Image (cartoon, rainbow over all chains, first blue to last red; front, side, top):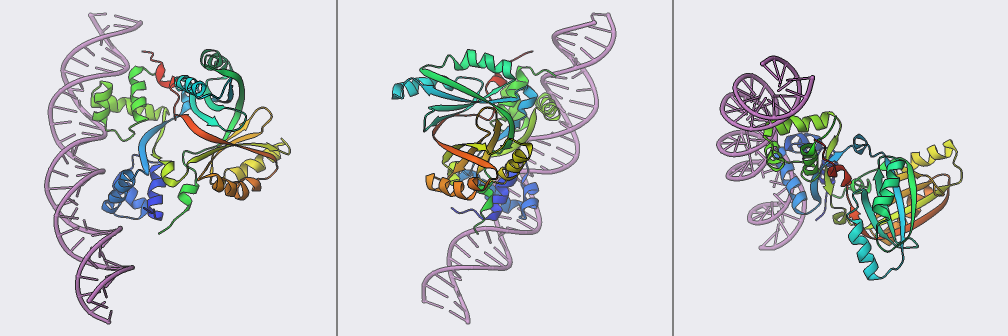
Length: 159
Length: 159
DNA sequence: CAGGGATGCGCGTCGGTGTGCCCAAGGAAA
DNA sequence: TTTCCTTGGGCACACCGACGCGCATCCCTG
């Protein structure tokens, strides 16, 4: 299935106003509400739209510090990876975790209130992860770009 | 303003079903629809909820490859940082960009269709960024954790 | 005991949503 | 070229549900 520029406009708008009504969206895209409803339902049924979620302002919760954590394991055996991953998913301060190629085995993105809070997270969450050989943390001083969807998705219009 | 466990339950539910109606949410949280409407509006007005956005399945768009890119600049002067950041925000394949402490100046998260596509991105987007001294790319083999909101937010109930 | 804050119920209004039908455009086949 | 068929769009309508309000109640606190 190919998406035309109106589909992309719908997606672009929904990634900002997920609660927009059919008529509201229709006006912005340049369609009637019924045509838009059909397209939106198709986008959902075809899996382009996964779900609709509220975005929280993490700064309101005091989570202003982002830390990138590089982790190397003692062993790259399947058992070690499984054991590590089974625990890392439980860490409440971890928002992302990638299994990486290269020298580092895993890279985590951790959210903390401040540096002292990260010390606590390091002690209570990260240092308790199994099979870890080395942990290296880098603090993000500022977030320059933060997009849920790359702009490249909306750039191409086909029909 | 302090949030009680019902507020957290509302937020937890809205981060999954942003389009849920008041009555629907009220049933899940254990409130009447009117009480829930008041709380939800308060959460919005107080800035806890930033906005509501549709989540796209990036795999449906062919974006299955995540790359972490470490970039060091020729100079850490304010002018060099400004010049770099002004251009990196235009890169359509970049979803995140952090100014970092430590040896690396910036860390980017880039989404590509595949490794060949990343070669194109490297050539067309990354290598054209100004003041770059060194670019180092690491491919993510798998994504173990991907959360928009850390679980630590929902963990604390106060009232 | 009094008062403020939050809740729940009921109501009316409003708007969204879904359906049926018709129309226009484009492509294919005769 | 004509005709048929398919695809997508728009209009109108009716139904259902959401939403917001007012008021009584409850709890907690001072």
